[in-house]
Length: 299
Image (cartoon, rainbow, N blue to C red; front, side, top):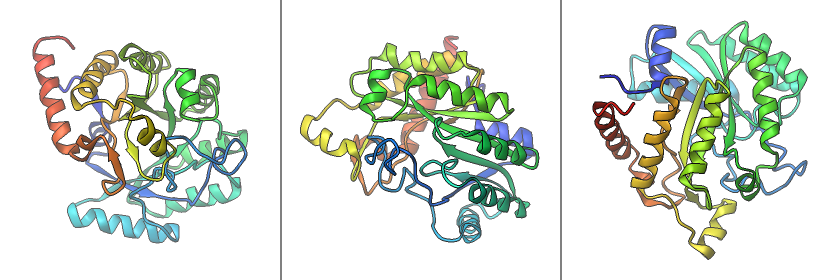
């Protein structure tokens, strides 16, 4: 049955002929919102691991071997992988070092794609040239943390740059022929359903290649932890988040690829909402609700 949207598994199967498994890697990078260039606090939702709770550490090649072995324990027949530079800003820092790290992955034939997570204000001319060279040798895409288009919310989250800077970075990547995935957070304190959906509409207008949906949650050792404990602001219920997602899928249709439907924090450090822990249960509920909506021809 038609899902009503495009997903990453389907894209990879069509492009590479089989399932492609993701391995999370780290460059031990930082970002201008942590090293004092803009701030030392980081984004309000980001922890000390740079939102990389499930990465391995050490030498990059050792990380690759370790992560592939981990995947094969669960999927013994796994043959192809996408290397995901996940935490912090992976286009920020010494360009020669970054290029060396990116290019070293070309030694692994089983790595058929490379995903680079970063900030839109960390895309210098030099790093863009590196990404273009990399793109000529391996399929790559870049993940940018938009989170929201609303400036009041961006300031609350301490993102450190306005929407116009995101637009500039997005256009630079698109001009360079590089696919872009944008991250959105639903349930930011003070945002209405209408405002959340405005962020989705913005991305569709920008012809974004992919999107990751997250719901706002609170974890230990983040900037939002103290604020939440003091104010107990409203976090989306599972029903409310499902409503936002269903409306978002209706807006997106098959205009871009959905990479993620919900947040996936470390369960040990999660404070709220508790329903976040049951990710598989949530996704099952969501797809059941989506099938009902599709049967009503609402999509």
